[in-house]
Amino acid sequence: MIISLLFGSVYCVILEEIVIFRFVLLVFVKVYVLGFSLFSVGDCLRVLITGGAGFIGSHTVDRFLAEGFDVVVLDNLRSGSLDNVRQHFSRADFHFVRGDVRDAGLVRSLVGDADFVVHLAALVSVPESMKDPALTFDINVNGTLNLLKACVDSSIKRFVYASSCAVYGNAEELPIKEDAPAKPVSPYGVSKLGAERHVLKFYEEFGLETVCLRYFNVYGPRQALNEYSGVITQFLNRIKNDMPLVIFGNGEQTRDYVHVEDVAEANLLALKGSGAAGEIFNIGTGVATSINRLASILLKIANKEHLKIQHCEARKGDIKHSVADVSKAREKLGYNPKIPLEDGLRKLLLEN
Image 1 (tube, helix red, strand yellow):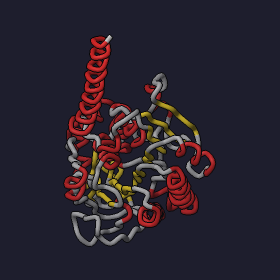
Image 2: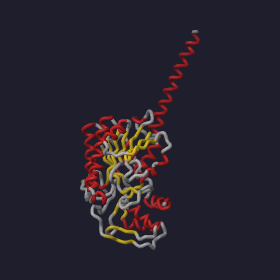
Image 3: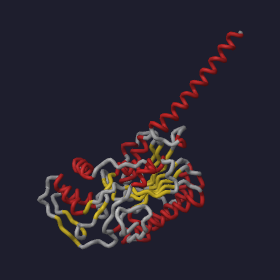
Image 4: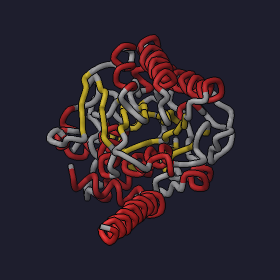
């Protein structure tokens, strides 16, 4: 009997040590190998991604699923598409909800079941915002406020907000740092700045951990083709159909083109970063490219240099020059864009 009791006690001690060892090993792997902060250790964590069926959103969904998150997408499919996330429909860790961020009741119920929120849903077109500034404000500002209120009520661990370089307007100094004056020149830029101010205020007043990412010009697969599409998507469509490329203005305006996969990675880094709360970060590459240069690169890669380039009148609301200083994101988030523009364009042409 004594021997049995002793054996049982020793067995329990050994078993307990094994359990402790496995837990410590799990912490080590998640923190030091996968890069998770300590707050992410434990059961599968759920992230609500608004606009997750859209261009940037769907790539963000891919990245978060690959990282082991349980993902819920809220999207009204106004500009997004189910085709962008269809490959995940059979997964138990993926959930799609069709709805609008302006629906406060729906937002509350979804946020209540989440650990984190990545807010990408927005009206994102500068030309469209010029046509309907009221709708732009309603979606981009009121929708964001609905989410922020729900996050405070549900004690969300962190809220990542997709802002835009449009908040800077025509910057006085290049490259643009996060503390540069905000002087938006379009209703879209104004709405993004307004929502951003609310996001920061919720951090200051309610202690909600928030991170604002100011995306520069994002490009890559799944970018929808319509009248409000970005210039790269428009150029690719015209090249495919042997049509001349149309440039608004003289083409010497510059942009900082960043691949969507690098942006998706930035979203993950913002959610995990221990020193990111309450901060604003530029997400670009730090490389300026003129529209004329962009057109030349695409025509050369596609072997269609015979196609003509047509210059039209400059559009209202478009800024002249934009390039990011990404040193803060590199230092505090570990952000390091990996896809050079020509490589990204070449891959995009092959896919199209």
